[in-house]
Length: 592
Image (cartoon, rainbow, N blue to C red; front, side, top):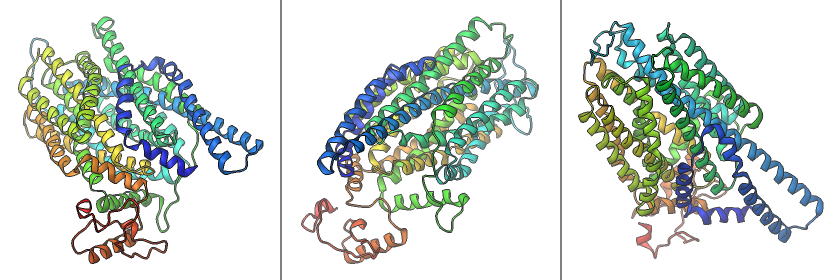
C-alpha cells in the first residue's frame, strides 16, 4: 500500500503546478469574508469526505488483495479513518479561523497603528502639520531618530530577532511536545499586547512602538507553530494544495472585509476624528483575535508529540541551528536549483515584506496621507491582488514559473521606480491609488508564483524540512531593506531615494533566478529523488567521501549519483553500472 501511494503521488507530481494554479485562482476570485469563513469552509467538507471515502475504498481493495480479510480489522480500519477525518476537519477549520484572525491583525497593525505612530512621533518632536501648511521633512529628532524612521526601525529589529531566534523556536516545535502550547501562548500574548498597545498609544507612543516589536515578533512565532500543522493535515498532496489555497483566500478575505469596514467607518462615523483610528482598529482586532484564536487553539488544534529527537551531543538550543546547517549543506552539495531559488527568495522577500512599511511611511510623510487614505490605498492594493493571481496563472501555464517570476520582478522594478518619480507631493491621492493597483497586481502575482516554483522543485517527503528552510531564507535578509532605508533617512536623503532602493533587491533576485537553470530539469531532479534514484540527504561525511570517490574515477566530470555509491554499511563505492532510471556510459549527452 505504501508503494502504491508513493507511485500515486509521483504520478501527480508533474501536473501539480497546474492544479495549484487552478485552485489558487478559483479561491482567490471567490474569497469569502472572514465573518462567514466557517460557512465557506463547511461547504467544502462534503467534497473532501467524498475524496476521503474514495481513498478509503481503494485502501480496502488493496488490503483485501494482499492480506486475509477480517471483519474486525475492517471495523478497526474504518474507525481509524473516521477518527483521522474528524481530526483533519477540526484542524482545517482551526487553520481557517487562525488565518482569518491573522489577516485582520496584520491589517490593523500595518495600516492604522503605523499611521498613528508616525503622527505621534512627529508631534513629539514639535513638527505639527496643518491643513494649510504641509511640511515635507521634519528635521527634529526624538529618542535619537527622525520620526519618519520609526516604522522601519521597528521592522529592522523584528527582522533581526526573527533571523537569530527562529531556529530556536523551530527546534522547540520539532523536538518537544509543546507545538500547540507555542501556538496558543503566542496567539494569546499577541492579543494582550494589542490591547495594551491600544490603551497606551495616545499618552505613551514610544511604549506603543516597543509593543509593536513584541506584537510582530509573537506573530512570527505564531506562524511557525501554525505552519507546522499544515503538512500534517493530510497525506494527500493535492488536497493539501486545496487547503493551502483556501486558507490564503480566507486570510485575504478577512483583510479586505476589515479594511472596508474601517475605511467606511472612518469616513462616515468618525469624520471629526473624535476617536483615533488605531483605537477603533485595535479594538476590533483584539475582539476578533480573542474569539477566533481562542476557539481554534483550545478546541480545534490537537496536541502533537515531538516529531524528532534531539540529536546526540546536541541540546535543544543548538538542535535547530544544527538542522538548518545540515539541510543547507545538503542543498549546497546536491540541489543547485533549490539553492539558487532560496538565494533569490531571500532578496525577493526582503523587499516585498518591507514594502508595506516603507509604502505607509512614504505615503504618510511624502504625500501627507492620513489613516483613512492609507487604508484606502492598501484596500485597493488587496483588491487588485486577485487579478494579479490570474496574471500569474496565465504566465505560468504559458511559459514556466521561473520566467513568470522574473517578469514579475521587472514589473516591481518599473512600478517602484515610476512611483518614486511621479509621487512626490500632497494632493496626489488619485495617482497614488493608481500605483496601488499596480502594486496589488505585483503582490498577487509574486507570492503564488514563488511558492508554486518552490513546491514543484522540491522532493516529496521533504516538504516540512524544506518549507522550514524556505521560511528561514525569507527571513534572513528581512532586516536589511529597513536598515538601509533608516540609515539613508537619518543621513538626510529624500524619501524618494529610500523608496527606490527596493529595486536593488528585485534586480539581484532577477539575475540570480537565471542560475536556477532549466525548470523542467529541476522538476526532473526532484522526481529522481522521489523514485529513490538519488538521495536527498546522507550522512555528510559519508556523502562527501562518496562524491570524492566518484569524481576520482570519473575524471571527465560526469554527473555523480551519490545514492548509488552508498551501500547499507555506508561504505562509499563507486560504480558505473547502469541502473533503472540512471544514465549509462552509452548516454554521454544525457549525463551532461
